[in-house]
Length: 99
Image (cartoon, rainbow, N blue to C red):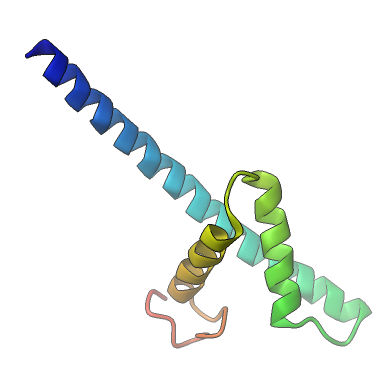
């Protein structure tokens, strides 16, 4: 019985850690997206264009530095999920569902 309880607690603790890690990662993604907007605004002063692809590359590079073990495909999915929740950014813009 004690071993079952320890196993149950270990599973619960791991899930809590994973949820905390996910929250930290998603916050970092949102911060990088906001940072890309600022970067693009500065770039526009020097150059006439800063495309969405430029901003996406900036976000991915910044996140890869913070989370080097994250796979590119996972990163793409997480970025898309966060962009969909943010108002006035990404392809969905003002049509975002979470804004």
